[in-house]
Image 1: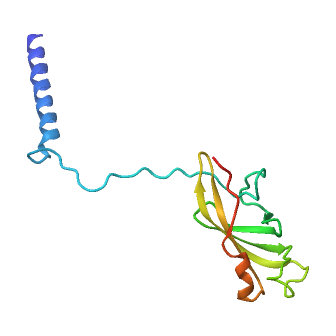
Image 2: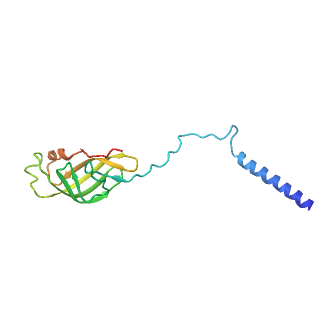
Image 3: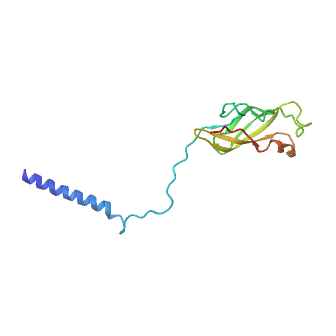
Length: 155
């Protein structure tokens, strides 16, 4: 029994000596040195919405969307959503205004839509800008539909 205790004591001493040596044996004299910037945590992915105006619910990948009460986007098919930019193709109607007449007429036209300017909130983020490119309009007539400000609810 005494012999078993002695062997057990010797093995414990060896194990603690080896583990201590392994833990400190790799470090240089003076301790461990860390350099470079600290890793930043991965950003939390907030649900992304867009709003048509005050009192209206936030929408995610809307099939229809109204801009400034005059331009209506329908049949939106989203290529991207949730990143810095959201892009879709669809149909635009309600193009009434001196900037569009007489080219637009009353008929709907194909369009490309681009939401941008994400604004983070507590539990959501919202796109704050929209640009609409109407297929078939001269470039100078697109200026009224470029980089329009969207409603973003207050926190």
